[in-house]
Length: 113
Ligand code: AMP
Image (cartoon, rainbow, N blue to C red; front, side, top):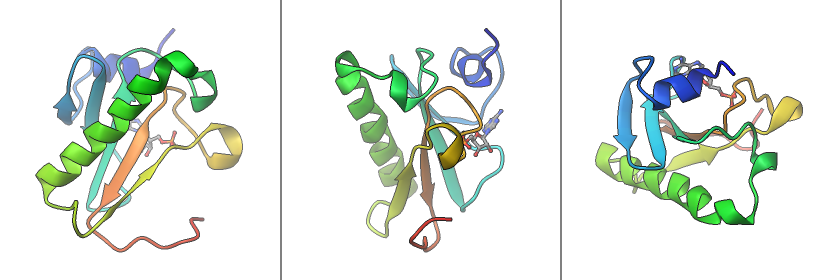
């Protein structure tokens, strides 16, 4: 299986990594949609949110906690940021390794496009 985010997470391909721990890696998006755009991925390959199960509850929490830590480090926690995960076609998922987008540094609109 050739997964670009697995390869970034295991260091095979160089990413702009801003966070890592035993289970989660955070790296800057190649095509940022905001002044700060960081993707948080589990080190373990999980294709979409649909493949998570109850045993992954802690891992899912760790993705959110990592995003919160990086937002604090970047100084955007108080002004605000958006966390988004796209699942499958209608949501526009293009990379099939689960990732949490953290977008910050500008005002976000709602509803999203
Ligand atoms: P999604 O459309 O939710 O699947 O998001 C995939 C994201 O991955 C997009 O925002 C892309 O810009 C980003 N992306 C794709 N390839 C890379 C890469 N090699 N390094 C960093 N970000 C990437």
